[in-house]
Length: 231
Length: 104
Image (cartoon, rainbow over all chains, first blue to last red; front, top):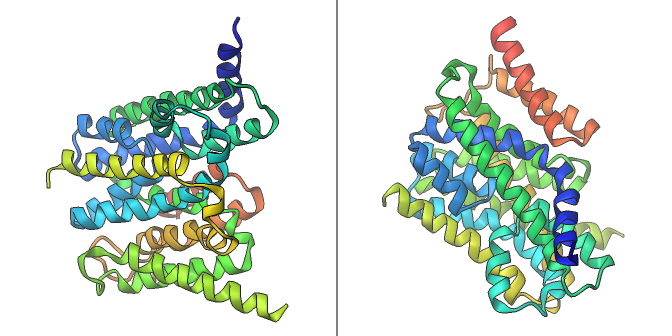
């Protein structure tokens, strides 16, 4: 067995425990996308082309609320901006990589694969260490595509009164559980939530997500400064 | 815009963020302040999806009384904080929601 394949397998093994929460995410996405009015092929296309849970669910939520394409696209961009932070960390490990590999790996660079491979890169300086990220990314890819597919099939069998659309706020709530322990984050969460809720009908073009996020970030900046000067 | 065009643009912007991350951004481009602000992005953006979906009904009007979603979301937050588990958060919220609408 060559070392590339071993590292690839290690990537699969390391990322697997993180795949457990991805399963309900993918199922919920598949069910809701069809429910909101996308065809099964479009739904599969979203998972294949976008390949990002939060991006896809934001798209669904705004699409079902009747937001314009421009607002949907910029909201998806805003959701993805959280990834820029990872770039600062991971790029130093990937700087020797050929451009063509950077282009390929970018497609697989999702939260879970990134988190595991970053730990691996810190400990291993092997030339083939990138196969770890490819292994982890490929695992996420297979799980995401197959659960989307299952969700599409299950969707037809799930009655509407089950209220599965409530799963959207719940999945995002679940992504914030660690932030609920930090004071500034809790204040930012409440401010952003209130702005979005009260602005839902007032802010034009359904741009409430972007407006709320912007006000939330400004509050975070001010709060961080205030707390620092107190010390 | 057709659904396919929308999907492709959203895919492009997601891909470009990832590519920017590994190909263009260098560690020294972000000082501690920018890094600190970026760490608040999830807390600033996810509530904008969460809160309206819980407190507003399908027509966009406030629904505060007799709203099973508020109770279920509070239970999910409590379970989430104590368990630190994504799966437990989602399922405790859904289970309490169904319990309220079907059993009570």
